[in-house]
Length: 86
Image (spheres, rainbow, N blue to C red):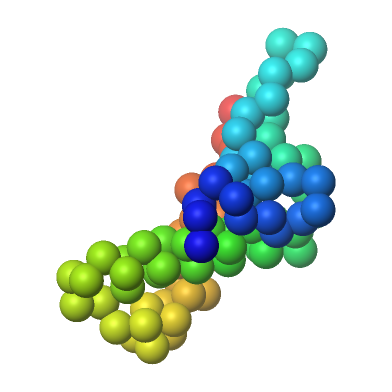
């Protein structure tokens, strides 16, 4: 599995989900422009990619233990991607 060739949606590559686009003086991303269900799917995809990297690193990470943390990882990713409109 190649990181740069993962396609979650036919028109948007995995790498494009979090890239910023600039228009009208405002920066946004596909993630920010998506609904809640799509944002969750993107966060879960990111978490799965992190788990894949950890398990394949040979550092002793166990797949079943990491998958039990999938929801927590996705929650943390979503929290980190929240935009403060202050």
